[in-house]
Image 1 (cartoon, helix red, strand yellow):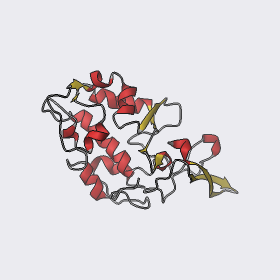
Image 2 (cartoon, rainbow, N blue to C red):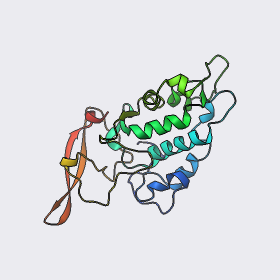
Image 3 (cartoon, rainbow, N blue to C red):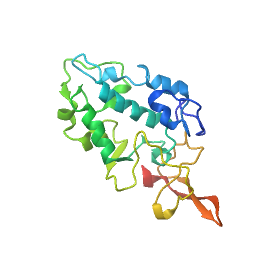
Image 4 (cartoon, rainbow, N blue to C red):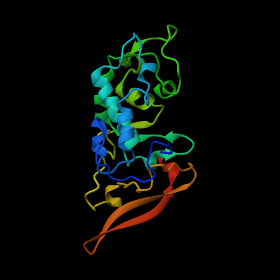
Amino acid sequence: MDTSRHKAIASPEGKLYKTCSVYEGLSCCTNTTALRIHGDDLYKFQNVVCKKEALSPECKKYFLKDACFYECSPDLSPYLSVEEGLKRVPLCQSNCDNWFAACQNDFTCTKDWKKAMNETSTCSSADKCQTVKDKFQNAKNFCEKVWANSYEVVADSEKCLRFDTPVERKSSDWSDKNDQQETSADDCQKGSSSSSSSSVKYHIVLGGFPFVLSYYILQSKFV
């Protein structure tokens, strides 16, 4: 991510506030950002709710997980491009289903929450106020449309990511066979052009010792 909030290099954080604490082992955010995520200035949810209601506690919990994932996770750089930002991150179906279940009875006036977060106005009487369930119809549509296609819902049996479960990095068994990628440590602010190449690192084991194998792939594969 190329924002002033993201560290240039992912590194451990001694402490991250509340929901973001799952990324203390390796994080693209500082605790200052984690604190802001839990406040009201960074994500303007008041812009998208209607009937003068705030997000329900259960729904807010999932959006906090989502925000910590975006701001702090070191696993997202393969899905970044300069032109479009974060696109089509493979989100596990069960994660999506739980997110939708937590929010389906909340009221909103828009499907495009990403755009609404960048505006100063809130829901007006001219906007159609509906439950999330009525506005988005189903879990897949909600998860993929609420942030303008930042996520792509895939089956849990496929390679996918979860909000509060960072990719395991303790094992050196990262290989083509498992089709898993490790985000390069300098990728926190790395957004490549969709037509450019990007270095991808894999852990391999040779003679009992772990090595990192790097090669280039087209960034457009992931955006």
